[in-house]
Image 1: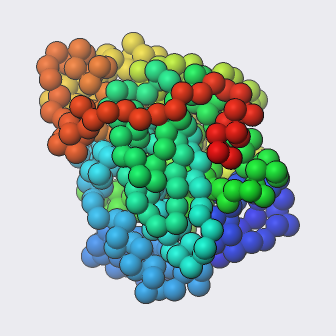
Image 2: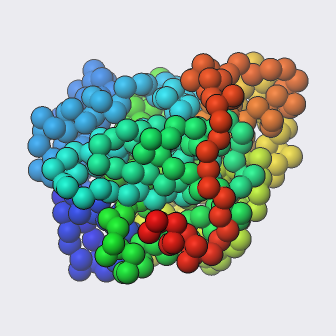
Length: 431
């Protein structure tokens, strides 16, 4: 498997270099030079496969000989250790629960696979690899957990002060060892910009071996394809077109779904669901892409005003707005609408939605008003207990907090406070 940059299609580098670099020197994003189709034989035996076998078969076809099969098997068996079950919310909508991993968020799939893959690639290196990651919520906790005590790798997580939930913050600030946190007095976009500036700083890169664990790294997107296949495998109703609705911030999750579709998964359509940060829905409506400063909302992990993976989406559609619009519909909603649907679903069905999944449920219901003969799958990106301050007042009762999260509540937070000045961040890294 070789990869090119979205800014330079003539570039061609192997998987290990792309994963360990994270970002191309031209500030593009790495993309596979080929997204091969799975054979009919794969789909004939699809229903009998385990989740791990699905993951292996997808990787085997996509990665080629980049990782030996025995090593790839080990990476998958050590990282994909929990399921992604479907919950039937109503006859037309299933919820794909992606929060059964150690940090209760969908990003556990990507972070754990990436940690094992990077650990494999650096196993014989003498230099230490430093991972820089910006988070708007769940990425930081998943990366911290996935890379915790991985030999030869240090992790530095940047997060916006006061803009992640209390328990999300504890997940990324309480581990110590090879995990460090920086509390930035700014927005997620500021955090992301600091990370990108570091990657483009030639002086810094001569002194530090740095890479990213955000979804700008292709190693995050590859495992996020796995659960699209797992979801389709579980669908009871395959007679209606399957429409996948993805609560979206940086759009890595949706991009992974598009890649799964390119490999042959019969997804009929995608719905991009956003909160007030509706840059991509506006693009799908008008054809004009206008990034804006991010707006704080109660679905904080989606508070992104300049989604990085939009470049990959454009690349997949050959920068053709009309083609993207045929494949993806965009919807956005307000915080008030989000609260209302959390209350409605709990009152009517006894099911607790987190704010991000609520945005997705609203979007699929809006889409199905015009497309009633479809079956929706909403990606549920996080457990509702991570957003107690939002969910509990809405449903009027306590949400059970799983032990792996509850145990963090009283642990001391360790984070370095910092502004948005790049030179201060660079000085921190060099220290």
